[in-house]
Image 1 (tube, rainbow, N blue to C red):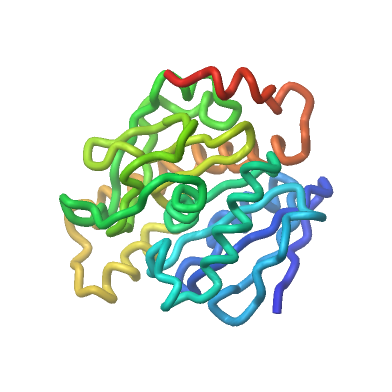
Image 2: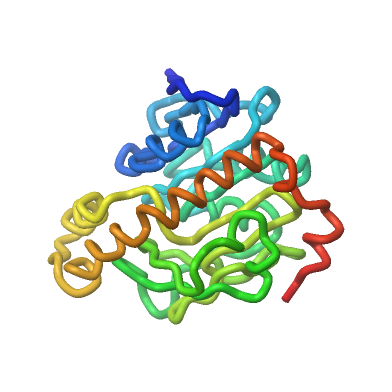
Amino acid sequence: MSDTAAGRAGVHLLVLEHDSSDPLMRLADWLAEAGATVDIRRLHAGDAVPASAAGYDGVISLGGEMGALDDHIAPWLPQARELLAACVTGRTPTLGICLGAQLMAAATGGTVAKGVDGPEIGAHLTAKRDAAETDPLFNALPMTPDVMQYHYDVIQTLPPGAVLLLSGTGYPNQAFRLGSAAWAVQFHIEPTAEAVRSWAATEGREPVGRLGDMLDDAERQMGEVWREFTARFVSFAAGAVGVRMPLPLLEADQS
């Protein structure tokens, strides 16, 4: 069954949870602080994907161990992709995180594949692209924001019309905007360092290198940066004055 967490500003968000190991975590507090309520659909536990985003001010699609096209493992994925594609065309404020980003890409004409250079796991830096400076969510980020990675698949090619916002030294397509109200991030912003280490422990990975002190530093740095990013997403979903940008300007900015 779905459940609702109380917020303050009347912004009602649909959350698609694909894996019990990757719930909202820190995002739950950040969203509540920003004034959002969340309707969490635990798809892995049998909750249904809503037929549309009607009645919601925005949608967040979280991560998971499965691939974006692993319909035989997660039979709800076709409906999730269909919903995300409809959100893009319907200009519903939407945020895809890791698997959620890959689902959005696959649903709108991009390609997702195994990373040829292996997985990205642990603490990493990303770098802003020029287009981020005019983006309502990414413009206030530092030039090289810290992120936490845990993925084997990558967004190989962006969907047509997508605007690249963040790149990485490993795989380039780290964050993009699609249309005027949909964003996707290949990395994770929601877990603690210990949560990422817990994922790694299931694969026998030791907490050293990018899973060691670097991961603790990333958690501290990310706490403020991505908390404020989350608040901007809620404000965007609320239709705050000066936050929503007209579609022609966003699509024209391809730098």
